[in-house]
Each structure stands twice: as structure tokens, then as C-alpha cells.
Image 1 (cartoon, each protein chain N blue to C red):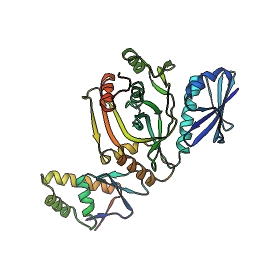
Image 2: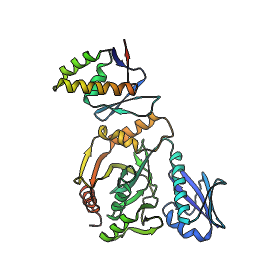
Image 3: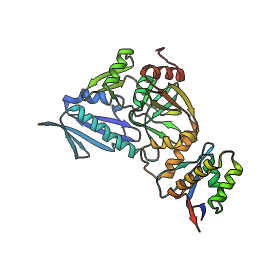
Image 4: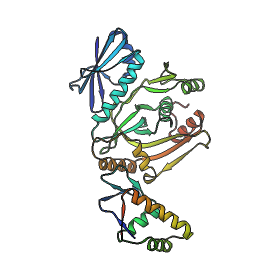
Amino acid sequence: MFYKQAEKVKIKKVGKNTALYVSEQKGIHVLNETALFIWEALQDPFTLDELLYMLGEAFEGDLTKMKEDLHEILDLFLRYNLVCTET
Amino acid sequence: MKTFFLSFPRLSIYLTVPHEIIPDIQATFLHSIRSETSLSPRHEYVIESTSNGLALLKDAQLKGHFGSCFDLICHLEEDIENTLIRAIGDWVGFHAGSVMIGDTACVIPGSPDTGKTTTTLNLVEMGHIFLCEEVAPVDPETLQVHPYPQTLTIEETYAEKYQSRFPVTNGVLTFVAEQMARYRPYVAGSAPVQLKTILMPAYEPSQRPGIKELSSGEIFTELLSYCFPPNGDDEHLFDSVIRICEATEIFRLRSNSLQSMRELLKELFGSKSGL
């Protein structure tokens, strides 16, 4: 399964941070550094393993914890329609 | 009966009341009553004496019957507040108090019971000029805060504690029904003031008191949650709040007692009165 940025997502700069929202939905989401990295990567479709590899290259840390964070961020992105999946 | 003309940001109101409650109305809307105006009112409220209390009408529609003048005034204030939030159009309405620190405005937003009203009370009593209570209307284009100087409602226990520690010198503190007290500052700003500071109070008895400066990214979504629902689309509200938080200095003020709040406010802003 591939993840990629959903259409209709709008981007706002908030100081040094980036926030995302979908017009039809209430709420706007300010991204942390990891979430922003994943969001920007998903301009192209990637699998979970590919994203985890990219995270491991870009950030230092425990890979198991990184995988948990990646799962959590992708779940949130999907819940708020910020990313979609394709097979 | 007597008719008052009340002036609020982007909203003007005629309020007609029976003679017996004129002093209460004058005290409640002290800083919003205007003697004359060329503007036509957007709404007309009428209060009538009835056999079992008071009736409130808005634009000839009955809004309710009330057993006491205090109940009626609370309801009237809430109705005017809701009307104001619609009337301010594309401005941002923060659920907040506001005071003038020097020649700029400080907005104090927060959820109920976080200490925004008591922070406003303390700043006014420390010598700063009162601007807003409950709603702080901010024009996102000019970044000006428009005064909405309504009476502050605080818990009786806090008011008693406050009075036992500090003299009340810049307003009138009265104890009313339902374990509440009301504070009416003597002086309030009447012209829009440039917004400079946003102060987020947090009362946490188990925490150490302190002041933390926050970045716009850190505070943006929380600040959005203190905005009244926008009259336009969400994107305009997002852009407005981004502009506001990027242009202001924002602090979290974490206090664990009346004394610690007072000391932190003095550290942040100084005190005109020396208290």
C-alpha cells in the first residue's frame, strides 16, 4: 500500500511551522518536524517501509520508536484526510 | 421609562428600561452608554416591569422573564455578547479580556476558569487601562483591539481573597447573588488600541509559577480554540489568527496562587501603582 498527499489539502505557514487543513473539515493541524518531513516526502507515493527508511536516513534515533511515530502520524494524516492510500 | 444608547464595536443598541433599574443599568454599561449619536441602532432592547419580575424584549420579540434584576442583566449581557460576535463580521472575536499596557493592548484569552478575568482584574488594579471583558474584538488588518469594556464577573471566594490581600482602588467590587462578585473598573479605553501582547493564563496549584514565551507555531491551534466561531469561512479565520500571532509577543503565565499571579504580572509588565 502506498501513501500520498491528498488533493484539496491547503498549506499555511505559521511562523517557522507548517499547518495543513482540508477546506470541508473543521480544524487545522500544525506539524512537528517529523510530520512535516513525512508530509513533504508524500508528494510522491511511498510505502510504510520506504518512509521508515527515509526517516532513518534523515533522523537519528531508535528505529522501533521511529516506526511507532510513523504509524501514529500516518493514522492522523488519514483520519484528517490529509493523505490517502493507493494499492 | 428611560432609553440608553449603547455603543459597542460595530454595534449600536437602544435599551429602554423602567426607572427602578436605571442605576443597575448605568452601573453595568457604564463605559458603553453614549449621550447622543448620529448612528441608527442595530437592535432595540426593552425591559418591562411585570407582576412577577422583569421581561426582556429584543426587537419586539420576548426573550424571557426574570425574577431578579441580576438574572436579567446577566442574560442581557450574554445576548449583547452573542449579537456583538455576529456584528463584528470579519474581525476575530477572542474569548478574552484585554487591558492597555502603556500605549498598546494585551489580550488575555482562555477557557473558563483559567484565570483570564482575574488576570484582567489584577492588571487593572495594578494601574493599567481596562479595554475588554469576555470578548476582545481584533481587526486582523490593522491589528487593533476594539474596546468592549463590560463588567467583570468573578467568583465570590476569589473576590473575598483578593480584597483581604489588596485594596481595591481602580474600580468597584460588589458581591451579588449566586456566590458571584462583579468588578467595574472606573476607567476604560474608548478608542481602538494596537495589539502587542497575548497573555495565556494557566492556574495550576501543583505547578511552579513562571512565564514562558511561546512561538506562533506552538500557540496557533490553542489560540484558534479561544476564537468565537467566524462569521465568514474558516480560512479567513486561520489567516487572521496566523497574522495576529505572528505580529504579537505571546506568553504563558503559569500561576499557583493570587500572590504568584501578581508577582508574575509585575515581572512582565511592571506596575503603575507600585502594588
